[in-house]
Amino acid sequence: MLFFQSLISGILIGGVYALAAMGMSLVFGVMNISNFAHGELMMLGMYMAYYLFTLLNIDPFLSLLIIMPLTFVFGYVIEKTMIDRVMDHPSENQILLTVGFGLIMSNSALLAFTSDPKILTTSYSSSSIALPGGISVSIPMLLSFLVTCILTAALYLFLAKSRTGMALRATSQNREAAQLMGINVSRMSAIAFGTGTLLAASAGAMIAQTYYIDPFAGHIFLLKSFTICVLGGLGSVIGAGIGGIIIGLAEAMSSAYLSSDWKDVLVFILFLAILLLRPQGLFGKKGEQ
Image (tube, rainbow, N blue to C red; front, side, top):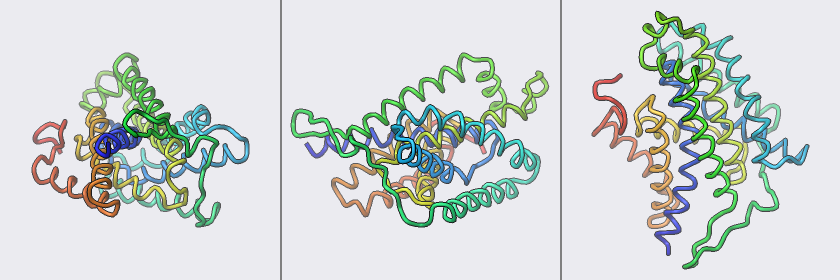
């Protein structure tokens, strides 16, 4: 019973981790930039879900219909006004810019919302479904996983079937060749960053019922997202999805059989192991930088 309970819990939480990591992986794949403000974008989604629920009584899952377009536009504008200016500069400049932007976001949230942690509690936050064998499934986590599956399928169809998605994939494969073929790579970068922001904020909104919400809540999710991207292969959206499930399972199993204090330790042991044994990640190409 303990094993299957941990298995289900790991898959459900891993799905939400995967959604956040997909946004980071998409940005890296198209723009070749590691977004170190990714955790703060998740924090933004958490606060948006919290205030839409407490002020307007909009369910956290329904609030995604508002959060997703707003955060896409936010990410698009940030890329156009800030990140696009350092695209041709050394990678150190790009890293410092995203780190600085993340610090601005977290400290702005600290001034606006104070450091007091907030809790998003709905009528079903503590509800669960009882399965045979004494296994229980959290309703918020189950709904989050189902929404994650829908968003993942939508992202796949967007990248595989739409003209914009194919242009994003072409830009990811070879930025210079895509530009020679008439693709507006600057616009593709803005769309990629907007989509990455949308995915991060959506993951934050869905996980807001499970974690405390505070201005620095995104820090741990940044580390987990980066670990998942390295595990799956930087730039691989499929790798990010599978990596998220692996990290979720590792956390759940270590909490069940060792201690909850060990779950983050085990995650970073996996991170170091994959760097040593397969630095390109599970789905990355050998020799890829």
